[in-house]
Length: 382
Ligand SMILES: Cc1ncc(COP(=O)(O)O)c(C=O)c1O
Image 1 (tube, rainbow, N blue to C red):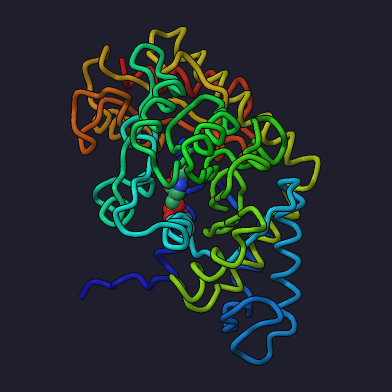
Image 2 (image 1 turned 90 degrees about the vertical axis):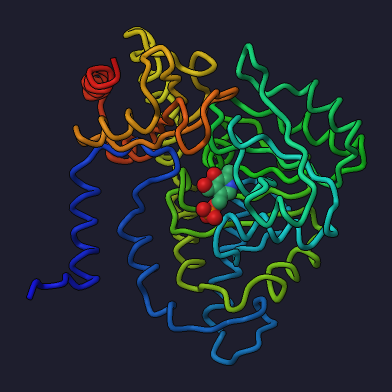
């Protein structure tokens, strides 16, 4: 009989895999040993439904201190006095908390089209956000690949949405959150800025901040923020009660105190000067890699990047994103296939790949190594 590996053996195997490949997945990163230690600590044993000072369980003195401190750290990292909830299990449910707290079924909402860089949870028809609410997509400009704020404004005037969601999973340029808030407020809508992908760039003031403009700001904690899986949901103080109620008891039960504490460790790390240097290097590496690929004849959507990621348009090479992903994996480079704006092929078989530099920058990739990486990528795409 063949030996079935234990889960611990498989987890060790996954660690070896992660350390043997070059990870260019834009939404992934490597957390510190300190984050891992707290994530795997005895905090996982504790139930603490409710909020600090207002729990349904005893024995919460220490977890109350932890959660209060994590909230303070979140405000400090993003330089904001917005109300903060650190309990959402992940980004999807944090977005849903905003919808659940502030919308009625069939209310009109607007989110960036998935194939133009938006996220599924921004109202895509296959998700609860698209089934429960009437989503109207907005788009990037066909010629430039850039967000078309004028189109968004005229569409918002027609649709009169209750909520506009900004933010993206595959958009490489800086986002004008202030403009989107102005558009939203002019038509009587609320604005949720989903900064999951770029929150580190906002925290370190490399990109425009939505704080002070958007009604809600949501970030996942496991991408550029280099924390455990989870999310932080901020809102203007007047929305605090509804947000807290939507998270618990609206959508969730007991908060994952080990994850919340580990988010705190990641936030402590994000306050160190080294984190700003890291974020600057993430962007510099993405820009350098995009430039190296462009010089070798590869077509980058929008011609470059302002952040940690970019999309490669593979149509000139005549291969699909799936083929590129597979060929790259065969030489130890991990990416994901991705739609490009105005793609002619379906999302299951898109014409592009997404490349991000958060993980390789954490690993300390050098510029010589980036040059070699660009050569290797081109050797299998061309
Ligand atoms: C912009 C954006 N929002 C929300 C999410 C959802 O987060 P999670 O996977 O933690 O549910 C993601 C994850 O890919 C994302 O990129």
